[in-house]
Length: 116
Image (cartoon, rainbow, N blue to C red; front, side, top):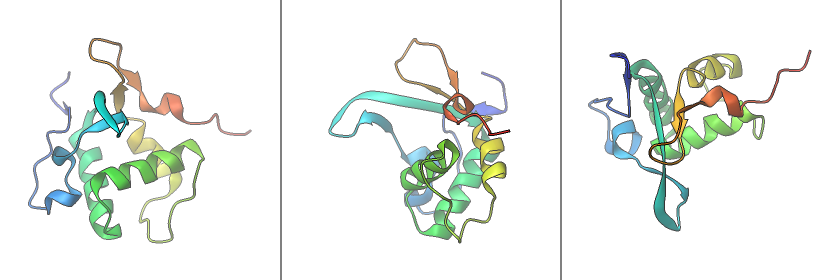
């Protein structure tokens, strides 16, 4: 992992509700034994934290909101300060891992192919 990437190591003065370092991701929240790991540059986590705070969402809810928008499954809210293109650029800098020891996959791999 490069020096500018972290596995959610952002530290801020924000309420824990909005903070990236206060979350865990699971394939199925009812069964908390299959974590999904995310890693990426600190500035991406900071942008997500800021957006969560502005929207009064938990970090998890904000991440799901943005991932859904990037995948084309939902629209951004009118309160979102960034465009879909800006979010795709940011989230595209992250990687995810579904099971410990498996390959890290670029998050942009889940985005739909842009229409020509």
